Image 1 (cartoon, rainbow, N blue to C red):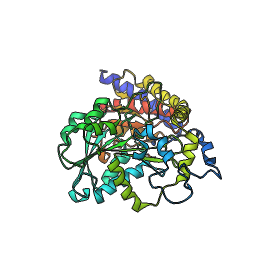
Image 2 (spheres, rainbow, N blue to C red; image 1 turned 45 degrees about the vertical axis):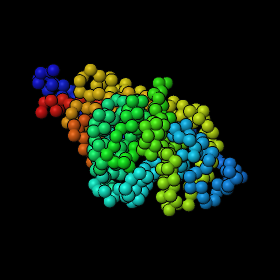
Image 3 (cartoon, helix red, strand yellow; image 1 turned 60 degrees about the vertical axis):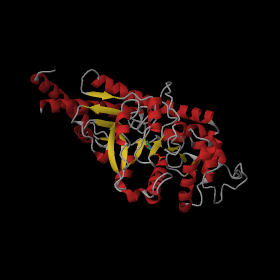
Image 4 (spheres, helix red, strand yellow; image 1 turned 60 degrees about the horizontal axis):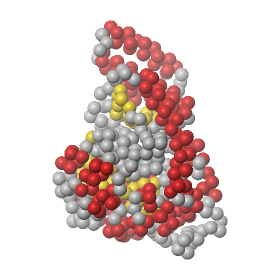
Length: 419
Ligand code: PLP
């Protein structure tokens, strides 16, 4: 609403501020959602477990030896609530759930899944639905294996289900990526209605799968804890018991490089998965499984541990929100999320300026995730959405970086309006 003279004056002031920012010689990284060292320290005691003589699992087997592809029964029981599945429908693997997603896709491409007509790779081209904004590594997996992607907008309660229901009528659509709780990066949690519709919708492909990446199941940032409906139960009730593959890990519970990856599904899918995985490995690292059981113990133990994470990272999210509100509030040039959990804040800047904001920030020494990373093929058609990852830098650095990003956002918006 400002006149062009007023905008020109505003720009001059912002440029002056920006030059002063650059002169500070900052070197800050807000790109990846990594836990800070202080968070990893919360699991320091775990490294001494299970202890020298404590290597016998509940079933009497020696955790140091080969075997037990599905994972120890006590470890599967420990994560039953988190996974929303009975222990016998859970697989506990090594350190990365992304690796399990990769393997599940590759097995489906090479061998097919229960209920299908054979290898997905023989049905090329196949398609996945990709709710946006979403997780870049999901999209990279599809792109790497030649799976077409269709972007579906998120609504605040999960993906736009009208669009999803329409798209899945096409039998080439084999899957959908879902981060159903505290989504990466929007922070939203799918509503019960969204879960119900995903579980019960009619799909053209008889072997359609939901890739339910529940990476942030227990990663709360506030006392407000939105409930996520149980996808396995919803699928079974709707008569589609094999529809969901569930993934999670303790990467952001214990150690990001040395946690446990978790996989769960229907009994038939579990048998299918283990048949494939059995060719790949004789068994996982069960000492790490015992270590986690001894350290986290039970649901209460997991909750108490996650509370310590919350105490460390919630102030960083607050700092970003305060910096954005102070600088961008009421300006009409940006909107940002106030997540109740997870690892990210989304910043929607003025359309057409996200890349410019990233470039301005880079010149001022602040690394941001590239604009477009939240969309398939790295292309955000509106050049609007930025993903802010506040967990890794120190609180002071997060504050500085957020203030700088807000300045860059304003400057890019004013530049765009002046043309
Ligand atoms: N899924 C989502 C949604 C993530 O945000 C991340 C990490 O940022 C991962 C999976 C990676 O998980 P893992 O460390 O278990 O491979």
